[in-house]
Amino acid sequence: ALLALSVLGTLAAAIGASRLAARIEPAAELPALWLVGIGSPLLFNAYVAWAHTPTAALVVWSVHWLTTNRVGSRRIVDLGAGTAALFAACLLRTEAPLAGLALGFGWIGIAVVLRRIGRPDRTLLTSGLAALSATAIGLVVDRATATPTDGPVTPPSFDEAFGLIDGRLEGFANTWLRPAYVMGPMDLLLVVSAVALIATAIFVRRGPEGRALAVPTVLIALGCVAVRFVLAPAATVPGLLIACPILIVGLILLDRETVTERATLATLVPFVLFCGAVLATQYRGGGGGEWGGRYFAIGLPLGLAVATVGLIRAGRLFQPPQRRQLVLMLSAGVLLLNLLGLFGLRETRNRTDDLAATVTGTAVTAGDGDDRPVVVTTVNGLGRWLWEDLDSLRMLRVTSEELPDVGAQLAELDVQRLTLVSLDPDDDLQLISSWYDLDPQDASVDGASTAAVPGAVLTLTRS
Image 1 (tube, rainbow, N blue to C red):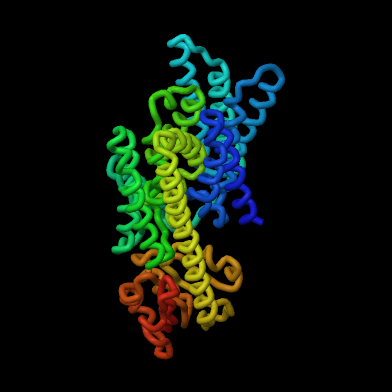
Image 2: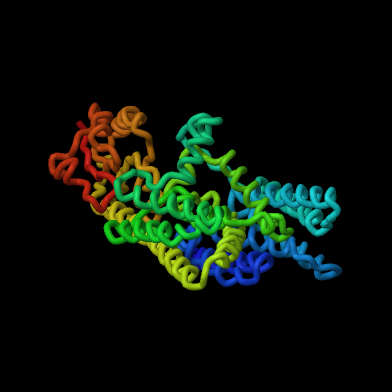
């Protein structure tokens, strides 16, 4: 049911983005639908039980309703629907209030500027106030209904989790520029592909001579993605610029006339403000396992709606044969890139399922009178992957530095055997060796972990 909700969220977000794109350029309606639906990180998020896609749908539809130019009772209905959608979004994702603030302040700022140049827009002004009100109420309700959880783990310090300038730069690098969590030669192909596409957009902006280079550079981009897909058809790309370069390409191709249109401003300015707000507040490491900076996902339909307009209008600068070639190559490249993400998601799920099965299959009773095995792990996500078996286990999530103290405490509790799940088994065994040793019947540190399992699963006995 949760995955179905995520899939429906992506579909609803794509439809909303297509409506916004059509306001600026009617010919962009269908391309925007496909680009958001199957050509963006929202396709990846559709198959993850997170709230990103439903929240993205609520945000994009709130923009659609709140910026619609209607009067009388219809305007009241639009205001109510848009405000309710944004309020609901603030209850689903912690970055949604940032989107609400970006919408509110962005629209009010645009209305002030338009008024000064003799183009007053009361719709944007009232919509901005409505967005700020929905965000404020959503924050209050969220804080009033949230249940705090306390645990024995000391939370990281501000500098460890966020930092100031260095933390912002690190976060930007991780969520926009990084092609992989563990860099390999194959990942450089995705970097080259993104650079080639951005270079294409810059060439097109420079006139006929630059446009002559468009087909060769897009062909280079497609070739890099195709080679990467053939040689290693699975990837997890945290950087948004690498996972969705078509977003940046479309925005670069926007001309001044398009940028200054009211419909463009009402969509693009909040998107830019939202991205800036996320960059200013996100963790150093971004959102963990993700495809294309997941904290930016709820604003992507806005950016992609405008980017599609840039692509459509720039395409008219080419002769029909060239335009068809570019459309086919870009479509193939975007599709292959997102298939890499889906295959990477499948591979990750297979590996975590294997790890969970290995833990439950090898866990032994602790010998302290309780039938439930003791599992000590330094792997962050193990509790989530074993959620169906948590009642039958006693699990401790610790850091490597805590292992000596944990070993001493478990020994005092007469725990004779335990299962250690570690990403760095050699070092972790050393840290706990004063109290527990590798069970002689266990194959070995190397043999206990297979390529399909993201971590070693070891049985330890009391020293």
